[in-house]
Length: 167
Image (cartoon, rainbow, N blue to C red; front, side, top):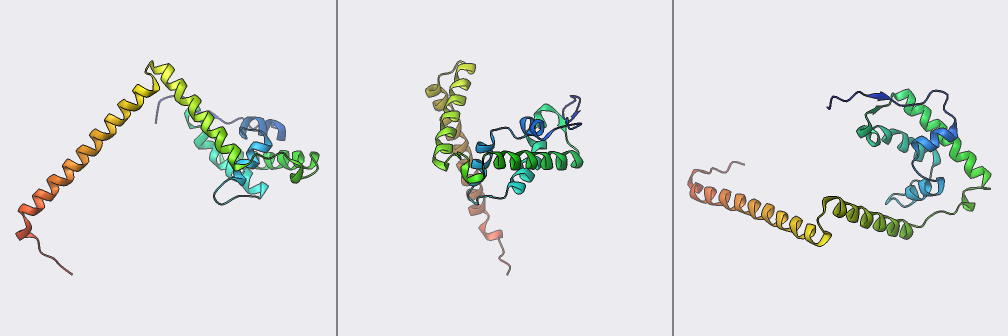
């Protein structure tokens, strides 16, 4: 663990809207769409908010933010309240403009491309050159693994008379 000072999550006097803005990380439509797009779709609003709340410690780990169980439960309840009110204001979940899994995939691809471009710009190494470096490193890793396997094989072959099979 690093030596940076840990901070407690902010939950005092939090409204449902503030909880949503601080801890949901997206629009209600995006939030729901991501759960619907899972391989095992989650359609229960309370379950979505519970999962989101209990993933917060991992999401805020780099910011050194600590959450108590009581805070996570409060955030869960406040985000449920916000999301249910939002859905009711829109006239029901069927009236939300949810994002299809295909659109989410395209959005993810665009975000990945942007991140890779940012990384290339930051490092000063063009993406094509970076890809070649990564491939060379992977080839070296595979070669080393194969060498280890082959060495173990040779050692076993030299010592086959010492092996006793027990059933």
